[in-house]
Amino acid sequence: MRTAALPLVLATLSLVAPSHALAWGGHGHRVIGVAAMEALPDEVPAFLRDPTAISQIGELSREPDRSKGAGKIHDSNRDSAHFVDIDDSGLVLGGPRFATPLAPTRAAYEAQLQAAGTDSWKAGYLQYSIIDQYQQLTLDFAYWRVLVAAEARETDPGRRAWYAADRALRESLLKTTIGSLSHYVADGAQPLHTTVHYNGWSAGYPNPRGYTKAKVHGLFEGEFTRANLGLAELKSAMAPLQVCDCPIEARTVEYILEGFSQVEPFYALEKAGAFAPADPRGAEFVLTRTSAGASELRDLIVEAWRDSADSQVGWRPVKVADVEAGRVDPFDALFSVD
Image 1 (cartoon, rainbow, N blue to C red):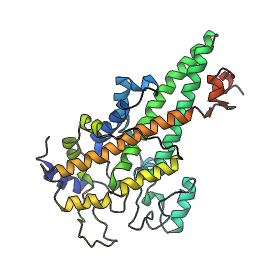
Image 2 (image 1 turned 30 degrees about the vertical axis):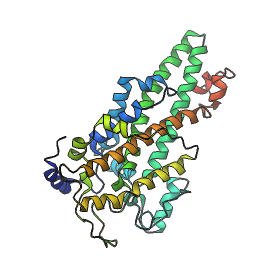
Image 3 (image 1 turned 90 degrees about the vertical axis):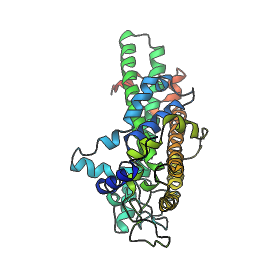
Image 4 (image 1 turned 120 degrees about the horizontal axis):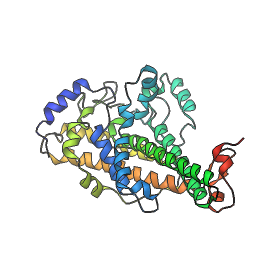
């Protein structure tokens, strides 16, 4: 592992890193996405377990960061999707408590924040990013189920060809959606994406243990992660599949709070010099957090696949179960014959 340049890298990153840097960097996001995909069980559609698809999703896991810089409106709307600033008392930047039940919409969340004198651009909305992409993935899977079933039963050549083409398009969309979900889930595993202490201990809060106020966010990104994180060890560290059988909102809150619980341990490790070259404690911390992200991503993909069986698609909507059972012809609903 190449760690000798870490002090220089950290010093450089501290000068250039934005207030909420690119969690895990390109390498970390890629490896988390690939590890999760390679760990999927056989029940998930085979095309997603193909090596080419896995590699593509690894690259797409980087896309929400790579899209930054497109323009002021684009960036001001999306940059805060990557974090949520929970303070020492468990409030989001002094506003609503980060707990279930969440505000049911981002608009309602925004109203809670504005009532406390802040907004989601400052406070972040990572929890809604994860939920949004999970819901999209569930719907994408539902469409795929319907298209596969309809294509298998269709006798009209023109309609069958349309089903096949739309299925191929949906498979491409599924990979994009999983890449986006992968990115935000990985952000949630990075403790500094869950806290007001996102780049050094914030001066506005008590600091009795004297944690650093230096810009340390970049410590997890770029060179350190590349030097200390490999695919094989990440896969070995992943937890067994855990299906929550609970609302996605509850699971997401619990997951982000797990990351938040590691904020102070991170700063304690930093104070103890654990992120110096050749110190295994820093590398182990990175491995623990990235494996939590990969495990959660795999679990959410499986849950979305299972949930999609109970979904409905199209207009006017048809139930997935009815199409798969052959009780309904979905063509009009999918092709939008009004």
